[in-house]
Image (cartoon, rainbow, N blue to C red; front, top):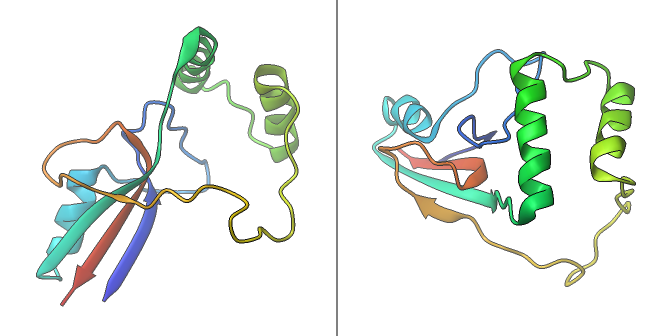
Length: 127
């Protein structure tokens, strides 16, 4: 069994890392895994919601910054950038207790077309 988790390069607000070389769309991930495994399923997780005028505006600003290579390179500069546009950043607790957050399971998605609805793609494959 093989399980792969990767960011969805077709997500509207996708911002490639300067430290990674390759990202996949749903069809590309399926094609790659299907070369070696006979049973392949794709799932999407973390729905990409851009509800409201403010979120749509911020999404547009972020896409413009990505397109013009204006996203900061260092984590400290990215933190400042995010604070300007999104407000105070929340610190994650060292542990998350059961029931503390709502769990939303991954949803099976099509392997033959790009998916713009989910931030993360999972591929589950069996030989």
